[in-house]
Length: 238
Image (tube, rainbow, N blue to C red; front, side, top):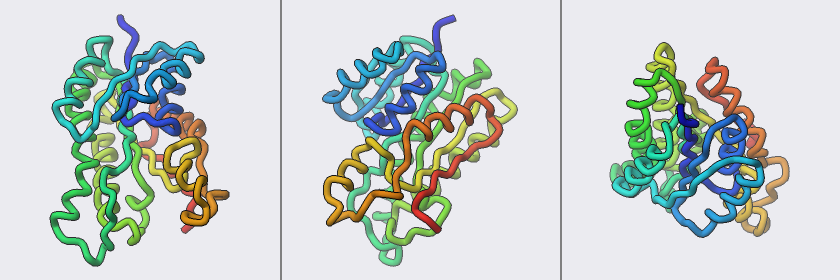
């Protein structure tokens, strides 16, 4: 049997790379996927330094044809035994929740549809083998009203519910699904770098950060034990 592959989709220097290292250490080959190839040499060198075999692939998750082609390329190297969907929302302009119209609300779901595409691509093989897992990263607005996030709150709630419902549907079929609900700045990530570079504009990050290695350890425990479908990481307060 070939070594199973962990597809880390939407990889960045924070949580995505922590997930790649953690599942790589657990014995998976790793395939990292991001919109730009600029960082790929560094990512591959980092993983190699940890003794992890890895490949890198370029795809914008909002491009269905390219995403499908990359997932097919990854599957040629071995069965995809785990897929992590971690890109951030694509919507840039937040509209107050009280001002939402239907087109604006619909636009937020451009972040959700690729997650469904990924699942639809990898799940048939996982279900046939009776093993494997999916994990999604979402935001705290999926569990707590956060009006300042406008239309993104709708998409976050949908992604969370999709993951939890998949978990319930596959619990007796050997395939896991779970979600990581993130409420804080993930250290080493791009948003963390942006905020810490301009505290006058964004505020002080101290006390509101999360260690991506700790999140990835929790993700591995969830996948391995399969006893819970969600972990909430909240350093923003109630």
